[in-house]
Amino acid sequence: MIVFLVRRIAAGLVLVLVIATTTFALMGLTGSDPVRQIVGQTATRQQVAAKSAELGLDQSFVVRYGHWLSDAVHGNLGSSWFSGESVTGSLANKLPVTLSIVLAALLLSAVLSTVLGVAAAVRRGALDQLVQLLAVLGFAVPSFLVALVFAVVIGVHLGWLPATGYVPLADSAGGWLKSITLPALSLSVGAIAATAQQVRGSMVDVLRADYVRTLRSRGISERSLLFRHALRNAAPAALTVLALQFIGLVGGAVVVEKVFGLNGIGSQATTAGSQGDTPVVMGVVVVMVALVVVVNILMDLAYGWLNPKVRVG
Image (cartoon, rainbow, N blue to C red; front, side, top):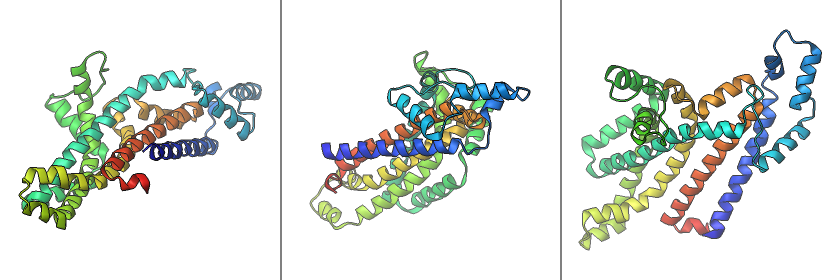
């Protein structure tokens, strides 16, 4: 298990480094001129040159990237070129917002997709067809449209939950839960559809297996058969889909945060990207990729626990 974990961590670190390097290189190809945006269109050439030197933009790509990487390894992600705010401090304030809705959406996806998938595989008939129809709709309807409908109908017209804003968990647990419910639900619709379909297919295959018929012939209860044997063997495929869905949830958070007026990392990334604010973009990319790596490692550990062959594969 230790070797299994070390290999996953090493692969994750390589992935973070590759994506960080690629992002840093691409930021120089966006065509935007952050220096001109900072000093203004009426600034003289001397002022532009002085600001470029201050930001280090007069140096080569290798030198600039080397400085950034050295600082990042020591926990310093720099400061925003536009606001001067520390990137680390800014991310620390905004990360809880994005994490709250993404992890809540992931939890909802895992629970609801398992319930729907198992029910469809066991009951079949009309329920199975309904789950497959919902899966198609979940794929077809974009998350921003779901978010708009939830915000207008549930948040504005019915007033059951807040349509905008975020309440920190430290201020009020109840207010925090209410503020993330609609964004998390909006974000999870597509993930529930994809994962439920996978759980349903895996469960159908497992329930047709010879060992399941053998267990039934030995008088094992249906509940024990489903949850102790069939679901455990069907779970690895669902975990793989959930790990992939998490990446989609992180990307979808950008749009959902805009709809519900949440000041999270997604909104920060959009603003920084349009301005060409390299330190902020790099900070967001590194943190989000690291988060995806951590979640995938946890998924791999769960997968290895369910299927010991993976640990030696």
